[in-house]
Length: 113
Length: 113
Image 1 (tube, rainbow over the protein chains, first blue to last red):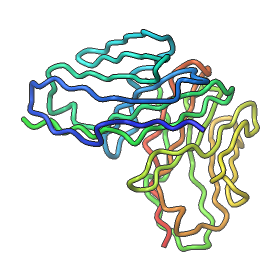
Image 2 (cartoon, each protein chain N blue to C red; image 1 turned 135 degrees about the vertical axis):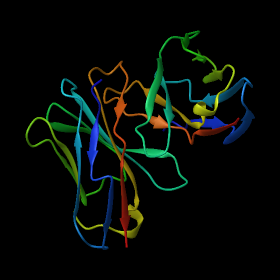
Image 3 (cartoon, rainbow over the protein chains, first blue to last red; image 1 turned 90 degrees about the horizontal axis):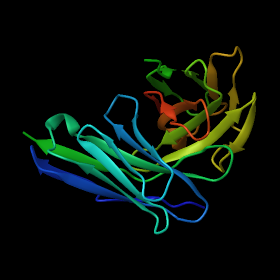
Image 4 (tube, one colour; image 1 turned 120 degrees about the horizontal axis):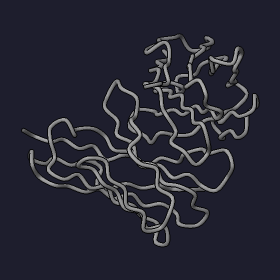
């Protein structure tokens, strides 16, 4: 059974600060790691899908890295803005052929102007 | 941009009543999922659906739950006799291929009284 953990649970930063969060997952049977950004009352927005060890992906000020051997991924936000305030979810996809995602508990980011 | 839609956004029901949650996945997607999040807990997998049949279901998905894709566009989750502990946010998701992003709807908040 996969157990995906995220830290910290919540984070408060000032506008302009850079920040990062951690997602850890079992490294055995790994297939892909997904990052989502979720604002209340909206659909979780897909940020990245990462599959290869050493993968690094970037979308604007947000980037992510992946280490499949040790079972962790980092999400970085450079120069946080108030509109970055959201819950960031990671989810692991094991090598089973149904594609189900196992989610961490999320990191809630609050960026103060 | 195509998106997954869900109706209703909120539903309140009495314990023991049947509810049907509706989803319209993205039109050329082949894999379909239901997840739920009980308040304060992780998003958890319920069921996956491919090629007009259930491909995997979790322990939560007991005989009270069923899914259908009756007309090639809608994807429904039925709970036959709701319990208080079924109160949660229910998310539908779809994807085109297993190695690609899984797209989520905005969720249906179900409250069982």
